[in-house]
Image (cartoon, rainbow over the protein chains, first blue to last red):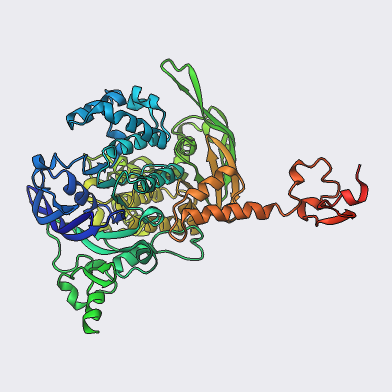
Length: 322
Length: 318
């Protein structure tokens, strides 16, 4: 088991009180697994990723535990996390294109980065060049400023840097959203190749785009308003979703081959609740077409078939009766 | 109704404007009444430049854009204002389309002052409310609010409502849903389709092919400022012919198929297309009756223990 998260709860401190951005997240990512993390903006998916690697104010650790390769991650302690960051757990941040220092040549920035982590630069350099070859970047980029690279090239550069020390877990936060379809495909395939070549043990791919996850992910975790809604294998989530939110979300996506005149797709009416004072019970209740009286209570995140977890009373309720 | 005729746009780039960048090159297409045309291309393909030229936000370098037969670049003063009464645009980022200092409904007031100064205030308010209803917003929930208090989908619909106040006939929709969440995306898309049913024409600029397919009758595929393929959306999607369009189709992440599957399908189709003689494209003798282009010649014995698969050789070999 590569990553094991138990009951992780993270709040944001504001003047008006705590924003309950992530509550009771319990899941695991296996060795070699690519897990997709999907949901609408504000559902807590980036909070989860940032909380695992750099938990800083206004984000506040409330409770929970995180284990990486059977070792406790002190996510609440920014200083102790230094030992893990970049070496064991790494991230390709959202807008990775802006993550490179514009005033430094890329090679110099890389050297500074490695020195700050007390990594021997000379012995790492051949591996860096080998990986640049792999992603199709010439070694000359090391002598260039970030402004001289295109968006796709910067994205690849950041991916190479983030994975240079072969971390156990890599988190990729919305890395394909700002790219063209053809670059998107290339970057997504690169993630799979990094996993296949064991540069990273396992991957968490955070995106709002389910169709990308359908292409590369082994499993998908759907979040809604700070809670986990459903987790299962990619095939089950895309083709046989059980949570009403997942169903509506997938039904609302236009597919190639669907015309407006023949099939009119519908969105999900309403909007997600404010997490400063979230409603009690199931957070999807207000928008859910299948809400039950029980939904006033929070549904547990239970396993309904092997590897398929759902937080919905309709699913767990019927199982309990049967 | 709207017609582009060999429109080009050249940007001067470099420190002293010494180099020329051809953003759009000799693009011609037209949009009929009540039609949605998708303009599809990757970043840098010039699709937004075309949208801006139609809205006269930037000038054309050569070529003519005409609306109802009138060259739009010739419009001045009152005629130009009349043009904006009929043609409007909505852009990608709803948050940057609003001034954060003012309340969001200020955009309606400006339209009222500029275009309908003679309308009484109360009557105008009614018009604003009915146009908000038309885009599926509840006026009570959205009026008198600042932009940050509204969601992206609401703001985007606000902008469409603003365009509707002007009784527009043509809307340039430049990536209007790419910044919206999946669950609200489809509502804005459906709204466009409803407007189309009421006779509005839309130029739907997008890089997402599945959205283009959902809504449009015709599609124009752009690559580096030039049209590489255009026509009925169904035909282009069912049978993409230009290698660039094919590459795009194969790259779209889909929910129903994996990339590998799409790629192999395209390969098979390519093989199916060439049903004739395998040597046809390089054969110096082919093409007399065109038979070997469509029919694969069978292997026949021309003399004892000598077989050939050619439709011509057995008759009159040179």
